Image (tube, rainbow, N blue to C red; front, top):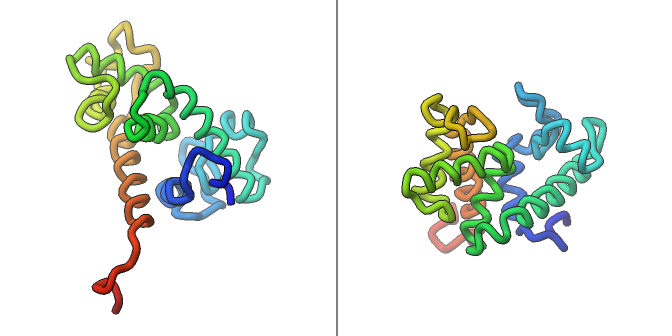
Length: 171
């Protein structure tokens, strides 16, 4: 229901909910993110929800946040498949860290508009002081391995949800 009128397919939202909370709407992370979509308190408040909000409200708020992130990346990442990866990474780590990873990718001679093997490599390096302390890195340390695995994990779950059972899948 929350994917209707949203830029994101229900499979993407479901894959994110699985990766974020394993569909447990009562979980709170060590960092304070809560609900089925694990939104940080300030982000959640910006989208009109809190811990007392019902699960559907959390999913709706996450959908609106994803739409805002997609708009943020629209001009910078013209390819929609690549843009999805930047949006997912931004949802997980915040857009500032992903912009830093883009800057670092460009500095390293990597394609700053392509996630796989390029910006995802740079995000991994933002866990090392040698890189996150560079003057052009505005957002500091980022646990890049978490972002790397999050994007890949959401895409893998989404792909599994998109598969239709075939003859060989029955038990």
